[in-house]
Length: 151
Image (cartoon, rainbow, N blue to C red):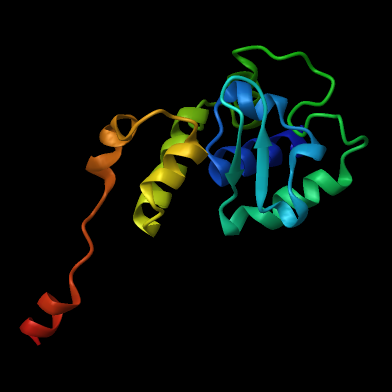
């Protein structure tokens, strides 16, 4: 279970994947060094992994028994409650969800200034409209012009 929790966190916070997507990621889908994850299926794409999660993801991929094994719950068939069940068993509560991890990943990319066309592609969405709900979590950076004017 520990390995599956590590995979859940690395794929959720590191790549902002949806439950179904992270359940399908195999060792072969992870780029060298853990910098990218290939997503197959209806939203096929390459997702850049946040720098702080790349080493963890590379480690998980390198220690997988087979390159076709999923990193999250290998050998266990997908279920929509898979994440909830494993998190609940780990800490007795369900505070971590893939939706929250994905939201954190998206907000972090927005704060970093990821170009919108790249973020739209990486997140597997069709338009900027998908990001409107995250606007409230963004704090506009202070302009250096305003900072120096106050000094």
